Amino acid sequence: MKKYVVLLLSLGMLLLSACKDQAPPPESAVPEKETVSLTVWGAEEDEALLQEMFASFQSHYAGEADFHITFQPQSESHCKDALLGDLEGGADVFAFADDQVAALAAAGGLNPIADSDAIRAANLSAAVEAASVDGVLYAYPLTADNGYFLYYNKAYFSQGDVLTLDRMLEIAAQSGRLVTMDWSSAWYVYAFFGNTGLEVGLNEDGLTNHCTWNGTGGAIAGVDVAQAMLDAAASPGFASRTDEEFLAGVRDGSVIAGVSGVWNAVAIQEAWGENAGAAKLPTFTCKGRQIQMASFSGCKLIGANAYSQHPEWAARLAEWITSEDNQRLRFELRGQGPANASAAESPEVQAAPAIAALLAQSEYSQLQRVGGNFWDPVAEFAGNMARGNPSGADLQAQLDRLVEGVTAR
Image (tube, rainbow, N blue to C red; front, side, top):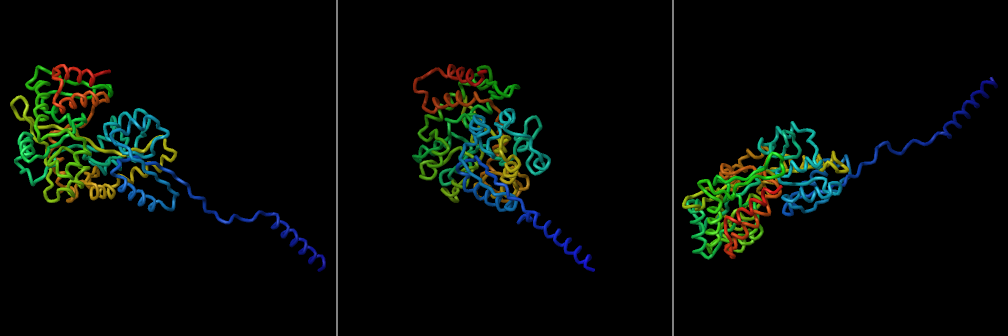
C-alpha cells in the first residue's frame, strides 16, 4: 500500500513538472489584419463621388483588411503619360480614356483581367471592345459616353435653330452672347473634318498615324474645311473656349450654347434649369453645302496597376468602382452614361437629355484611335484658325505642315 501511494505521488510530481515546462498557449489564434494602402487617380470633379465609393468599399471588406485609400486628381486624358513615367510609383487604381489601353498594356502597366467573362457579360459590348487589346480584356469599363454633342439654352434657340451652326451663330450675335467650342483641343476639331471624306487614323503599327486632311482631290478639300472654320471664327457670336471656360460662361450667362460632354450635364442643368437642352452637333457650311459635324467617341476605363504592392486589392477596388450600383450612382450624381448594360438600360438613363443627344450623335461618331502625334499639330492649326489666321498664312501650307506633324514617325 505504501509503495502504491509513493508511486502516485511520484507520477503527480512528474506531471506537475511537465506542465511547468510547457509554454502558455497564445492569447488569441486570430491573425492580425493586413494593412492595405491604395492610391487612386481620377478626375478632380469626381473626388466626392469616389470618396463615397471608397467608404462603401471599406465597409464591405472591413473584416478582411485595414484600408488607407488616398485620392489624387489626375486628368484621364493624360493618365498614360503620368503612369508610364513611373509605373512602380504610380497609382494602384486609375481612370483613363480608352485610347490609352493598348499603350498601357504593352508597357506592362495592365494585366489581363482575371474574371473577364463576368466583366464582359455585365457590360455593353462596345465598352468591352474599347477596354480590350486583340480580344483580351485589360481594364474595367466605367462609362460609355466619352463623346461630345451640343448643349443649348432653350430660351434662345428652338429645336430647328440648333440644326445648323450658321443659324446658331446668327442668334448668338444678335443677342450679344456666344456659342463656344474648344479649338485648342484636337479632340473637338475632328468635328469639322470627320464627315468630309478627309481621313485620319492609326496605322497597323499602333503608334503612327495616316492623315489626308490636306487633301486636294476630293469633293471637299482641306482648304475648304479651313475656310469654313475661319468663317465661323469671324462671327461675333463664336468663341473658342476650353471646357472650363465654357462652363463659366454658362453660369454667368455669356454662353448660350456649346460643344461638350455628359460630364457637364449636372452643372448645366443647375445653371439653365428647364431651359437646358441637348442635341446632336449641328451642320456647318463648307464649300456651299451643309456638312454634318462628326465626333470622336469612346469610353472611360478603370485600370489596376500591374505594379501595385496589393494587386488583388487594387483589382477588387477597380471592380467595385465600376460595379452596377456604383455606375448607377455615378449617373445620378454626375450624369455620366454607364458602361454596365443593366444600368444603361434603366429608364432614368434612357430619359436623360444628354444621353439622348449622345446617342443621336453616335451615328456620326468614330471610335478615337489616333497616335500621340495627332494632338499638337491639329491644336496649333486650329488655334490659328480661331484667331482668324492673323498673319494671312497660306491655308494649304498650314494643312501640309499639320499632316507632316500628325504622320511623323
